[in-house]
Amino acid sequence: MKLAIHGGEPVRTEPFPSGKDIGAEELALVTEVIESKRLCLHGGEKVPLFEARFAEHYGVRHCTASTSGTSALHVAVGGINPNPGDEIITAPITDMGTIVAILAQNCIPVFADIDPDTYNVSPASISERITDRTAAIMPVHLFGNPCDMDAIMRIAREHNLHVIEDTSQSYGTMYRGRRAGTIGDIGSFSLQQSKHITTGDGGLTITDDDALGERIHLFANKGWPNYSALGAREYRIFGFCYRMTELTAAVGLAQLPKLDRITAGFNWAGDLLTEKLQGIPGIQPPITTPGGVHTYWHYALRVDEQELGMSNVEFARACVAEGAPCGAGYIGCPIYMYEALRKKNIYGDTLFPFDSKEYGSGHEVPYEEGYCPEAERALNEMASLHVNQYFTEKDIQDMADIVHKVAEHARD
Ligand SMILES: Cc1ncc(COP(=O)(O)O)c(C=O)c1O
Image (cartoon, rainbow, N blue to C red; front, side, top):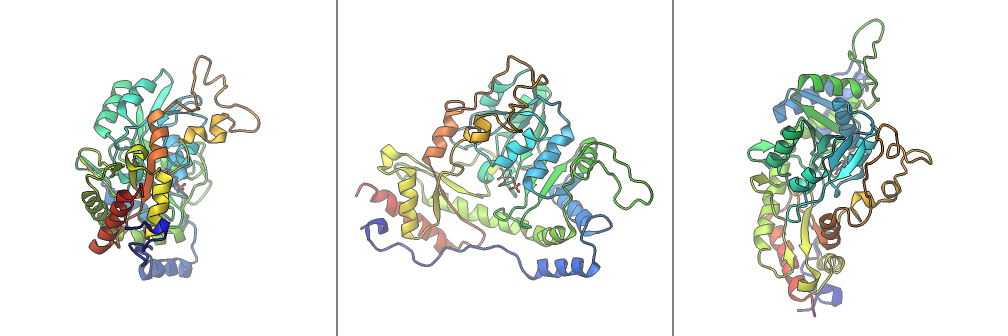
C-alpha cells in the first residue's frame, strides 16, 4: 500500500471532528450580562458566581477568576509572596505563561528535567535542583497527564516549599483519586480557546488555604478587597488588575456544567486510541502516570527515528497526508532555550533579576543545551495527534489505521 504522501490513497478524506461546545447556553448568559449593563465584576454577579461554582466543582474553598492562564499563575505566585531572587522549580516543556508568572515577581525559573515516559517533571530532578533559594515547585500537568504528585509533595514538605500546580492543560485530570489542581497549595487553570473548556481567554486560581485565597484575590484586583463597599477604597497589598469581566464569566458559567462530559470524552478517546496503537515498532503511545487519569489535551506520541525509519516531522507530514491532524513536537525547544531566557534578558537591557543583589552571587541557571537532556530529546521525537469529545469509535479506528499504515510503510 502506498502512503498518501507518496501519491497513494489517503486513509480518510472526511475531516476528523473538531469544534467547541459553545452555543445557546453561553449566548443566554452573555445576553443577561449585556442587558444588566454591568460588564465589570464590581457590582456584577457572574464573576463571583463563576468563582463559587468552580471552587465547588473542584471541592475547594477559594477560587479567583482572572484574565488568562498566565495571570492565574501570576496571582498564584503573588499569593505565596516569594522574595525577589527566590527560585521556583518548574517544567522545561510548558507554555511561556508558566515562566512569565515567575519572572513577573522577579523570581528565578529553575528547570527540572522530565520523566521520559510521561513528559512531566521528574521528582528526582526536582530534588537535584533544590537550593537554599528555592521557594516553590510549579509542576505542569502536561497535555492532561498528571505529575507524580505523591513524590512532589513529599519533596515539598521535606524542604518546606509551596506547590503551585499548573493545570492549564489538565481539566479533569486525576491523580490517585484526586483532581489535579487540588493536591498542591494552589492550582491554576487557563480558559484560553484551545483548552477543554474556554472563554476565549481567562484564568482560574484555586486553593483550600484561607490566607492564600485572600491574598490571591487581593493580588488580582490591585489589593482592593471589597468590590461593593461604599466609601473610601482600601488597597491592602500590591497587586495587578487581572479582573475577569462579567461577559467572560457568563461564558465560563455556561461552560462549567459541560466540563466533566468533555473531559470524559477526551479521556475515553485517548485511552482507546492508545489501546489500538500498542506494539508498533518505533511508535510509543502516551504513557499515563501510574494512578492517573489522562485527559489528552494533546495526544503526544514518541517517534523513534531509527526504529521507525522516519523522523517525527516526516511522520507528522505522512499522517496529515493520510487525513489525520498531526504536528511535530509541541513547543519548538525547551522553554529555557528561547532567546529571552537564554540571554537572561527580561527587563530593558539588563540581566535583572538574574544578576540582582537579591539573587546574590554563586548561583547558576544554565539556560542552554544540555540543561534538561530528556526534555530536549523528547521534543525532537514528539508527534502530536488530537482527539476530542466528539470522536466516535470509527474516528478512533481511522486514526489508529493511519498510524499503523504510516508505520508499516515508513521505509517504502
Ligand atoms: C501549561 C500552560 N501554562 C500556562 C499557560 C498560559 O495560559 P494563557 O495562554 O491562558 O495565558 C498555558 C496556555 O497555553 C499552558 O498550556
